[in-house]
Image 1 (cartoon, rainbow, N blue to C red):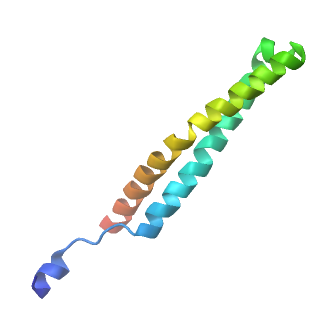
Image 2 (tube, rainbow, N blue to C red; image 1 turned 120 degrees about the vertical axis):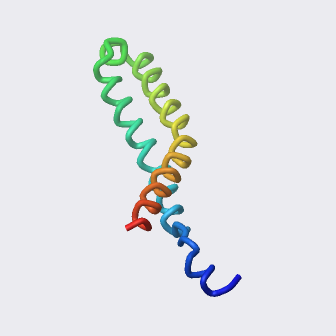
Length: 91
């Protein structure tokens, strides 16, 4: 490659930005889902007034649904960080 080709090459999104996006996705998405499930559990009648067994079932459902969203957070964080990085490079 010659020097003009190197200068014409478009810069890439930083790996640190991508890694930060993945980590934030892994943290923020499950926390958001956990909070949403907490609100839903407080509104549902079977979670509020059903005693210990119902409360345990609701808590387990909350934890399981939150755990299912952990793998969703990483790709979501990656794509958001990549899109933000590409947009900043265009400026």
